[in-house]
Amino acid sequence: MNRMNTILTQELLLSLTSDTPSISPKFFYDDIGSHLFDVITLLEEYYPTRTEKWIMDNYQREIAAAVAHCDVLVDLGAGNCMKASRLFDSIKPKQYRALDISKEYLKTAVADLQKQFPNIKMSAHAIDLSLPLAFPDIEALHKVFFYPGSSIGNFDPDKADQFFINLANECHGKGGLLIGVDLVKDVEVLHHAYNDPLGVTAAFNLNILLNVNRITGSNFQLQDWEHYAFFNAAQSRIEMHLRARSDVQVMLPSNGGKDHPLSFSKGDLIHTENSYKYTQEDFVEKLQRAGFGNVRCWTDPNEYFLVCFANVQ
Ligand code: AVJ
Image (cartoon, rainbow, N blue to C red; front, side, top):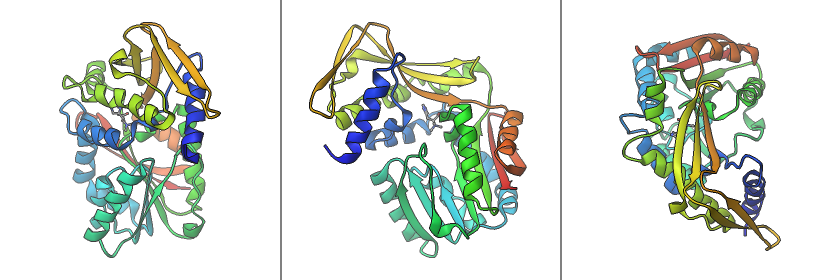
């Protein structure tokens, strides 16, 4: 087993044997998972991607005017790099730095993009955003962090606060943050976005087990699990879980070669994702608390989604 997988196996062993078993949502994004997510963004029920695109397109000039200056566009969840590339003509970054958890997928996307925009210096970095990022080579430059798609929704609110504080520090007094976040709305709309009738979100959720099997050598069987997603209003978040369809035994090989047995009873849950939804007011306040200011906001007519640009103060 390679070093990275050894570390990830250790992390998974801990989270799966806790009182409330969980798998971090970062494990969704293997090759199949990244493609399934792309399909989710095409679904009628999944409004966030399409709505964010509408806001970015509709207010492109205002957004570019707010950003004003950008030496380096740092894309914090680049995926297929489509969202950032649509900003290139208006924001005109000199450099584009694409970060994502899924390395192979990212490298291909950046290589394709570089051909279309030969004058922008591009690089791809496989990173885990739960760890601190440090780019000493671009410290002096005017950076704009780009964090679209409501990826911030995966962080618990206090972790999001810390993340924003880190980003504000990384700005070194210049630049800012362009971010998209999903807003609180009618529960039915939220529910359907994570329970699509085609079952793509269910497949996306179940695929996490295949990735865990690949990384750790465990033997999760997909037919033993079902997709379960609901809006937790008290916490203002969609929760995704995998629910055991019967009593299930799983073997998780641990690093020493010793197998670690996991048992689940019918109905037991593995928590795979939280997707927090904010109000505009709370979100702006959050940015301000972290050291951002002059927050400008754009939304869609339904107020389903919010795009903000904030300067570091
Ligand atoms: C990529 C974290 C923004 O929370 O809506 C989509 C992931 N999960 N459908 C989200 C997701 C299920 C998505 N984020």
